[in-house]
Image 1: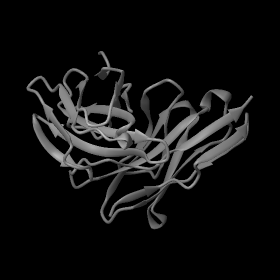
Image 2: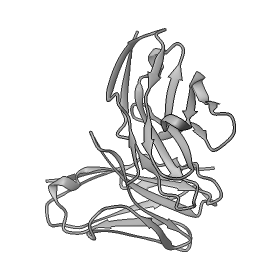
Image 3: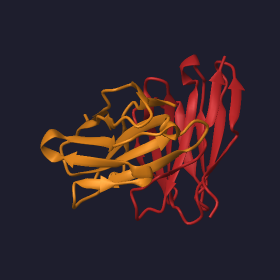
Length: 112
Length: 114
């Protein structure tokens, strides 16, 4: 099976802009989670989607939002970008019957 | 609030040295525990996991971890490290209550000198 894919891999944006990141889970996986990874902070949970419904949400401002489509693909949107949003954004999928997550390569976002 | 603490942020070892990375969690209920590893330039991948049963779990590449419930700890060990173990290691916990919310530690960067 193909692994989790994320597009784009790299992005450069300026403050105030918005960005949309995409994640395609492993075939058959219905759960998609998003994380923000920064040096010193580790991985911080953004949200999880399961069968198109947001099931869990981390402690991030409302500028961070997401959605999941019927084919389990997920998108994450960040509006009004701030410098502090520069990070590696990771997507992970799992079948829904297992706790084990499978991670994608991430999208590296740089906000100037 | 739930949290995961990894006490060692950077560890440098010589090849063949023994490794122990600490992980402590703060969580009121029953938990599932994980160690993930991120090799340079690669995806995060599962190293090992504990759900229930024998508190000593074995993972890939000779790694093992011991769950000590009374200490809220899940330390990672390897008797003899190799240069190829150079990576960042993350401890994570989820609740068994079904919230499926992963809490990760801040990670430990391990550098093994050849």
